[in-house]
Amino acid sequence: MLMARADTAARALLQEFQINTAPIDPFVLAGSLDVQVVLRDLDDDVSGMLLRRDGRCVIGVNRSHSPLRQRFTVAHELGHLRIHRGRPLILDTDTRVNYRNTVSSMATDREEIEANRFAAALLAPEALVRSSVYQTSFRTVGELVTQLGRTFALSEIAMTYRLMNLGIISGPPQ
Image (cartoon, rainbow, N blue to C red; front, side, top):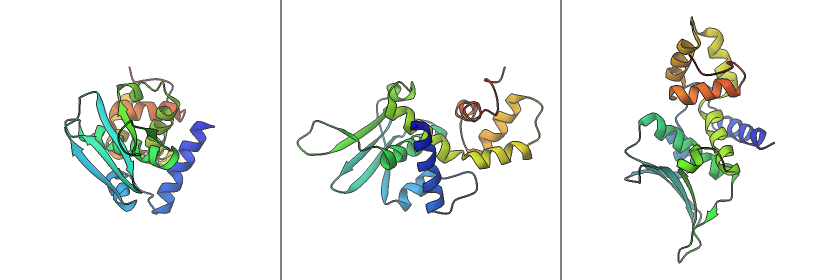
């Protein structure tokens, strides 16, 4: 059910802005949602965070991470924005923050798993991925992952997980 919610929310966001070609730009989507994205120096184990305060939203992204990881981080934080209320941060205000860090990337927390699924579904929508698989010439799973990673502007590991989760491949390239 959680996965269906993430997939549905990602699909709805793409439909809302009539996006149906890859690569999807999560920075543009954030701007369309009036969410400011800022690149900041963060601890290396923190990829990003979502700050919600007084009706405004800011996504902070680790500037030292690769551009592909930054794209996934923005998409992940948009997932929190669209499907989660946020976690309280103990400050002198009523600010709510979601962090994307090493814990979230291990996918042990329900909200983090769901935000990762949202990000994957947003950046590599199922229909576009399936269509691209049929239109791509490849001899090995590794070639498929590499080519689709370029098409969708995802890291090879993120593309591998997406293809596995969609049942297109059964495991990582050998």
